Image 1 (cartoon, rainbow, N blue to C red):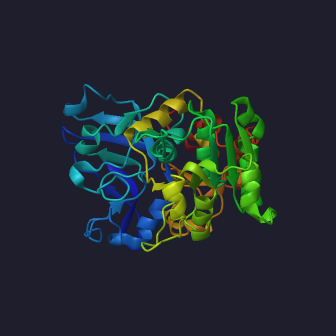
Image 2 (image 1 turned 120 degrees about the horizontal axis):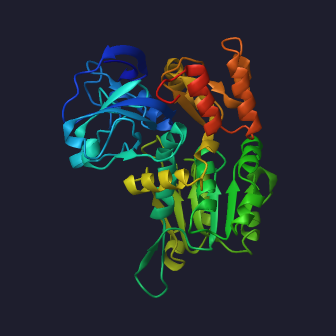
Image 3 (image 1 turned 90 degrees about the vertical axis):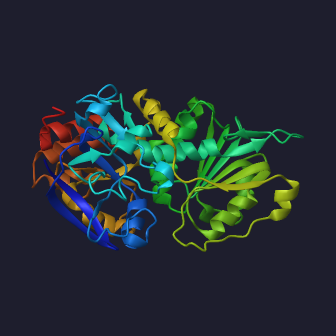
Length: 424
């Protein structure tokens, strides 16, 4: 079977190729990829090439497929897995395998599996680790977004507090406590806000800061203070540039106290240090943002570490349980991962999108791999009507849903514009 795929040959060397997949083995599964969400991590791997810890040294001779936030439909199941999977099953994938200590991961390391390809062969280790996950929801884009959502979910679960006068750690954010998300109006920040409001263990106060009024305005549009209030949470969106003493203002929103949990969503030294200063007694700072600088450092108040029991930790990615939680919350309509999406595109747009990723504004870029179309903001889809008049209708669907990408929009794209026989 032929597949089209975007392959990485070396640093900044991406190419859209068509080639033949090898015959399926008894311990493998053939899948049809439908959607893949492009991630900053893919940009980092592309710019580093074989210097990236997950990209193999022989990528120049044996190029790897990029894209690790993908979903689709199972087409053929090798004999070993026929009691667990069936053709027609929808799936999501947990790419962080850590198989026998290896860093190899779909979307970084494999020749025949990745998100930015039309058909892929899932190797046996993915199934052995339980990382090919059947998805009971009704949209592909939400399954693709389970991976970034799992990173946020993992960050909440990884933070911790202590029981006074004991050495017992209580995992997760402080229930009915105070949470600050700094640099939190980007796509991953929106995912964190959505999760904080709609999960079972909730804070009482949630404050989100960002230096962009445009990002803050969109955040408040898609996740309103009224929605948070319905779930018993007081939500504030604030821009540090609006206050002479921002930290004093932040503490005034929390009755003059420091915060129980502070998440830092941008790898900026002053932001990390600000987060440290905003911690209350037994507060935890979670450095969520992944820096590219291997020497990245920031100053922390060690007096408070000693006397106020403040803690600093970090989390990167989520595990399979986090993925399953994301998929279950999504299928139950408790969370809307689609609020992260600001652009959609076809497979032919991937190379330029990845290479220029930091320059492209907005949030997540969702790729529909069996389609060719330029990367386009979802609130500007009508501009493509000269390519196909149906894009104008698609744009209307998006506008009717508060400029969010939804199942209705995806269904129209897949059925009416792409004409995919597997989803019609």
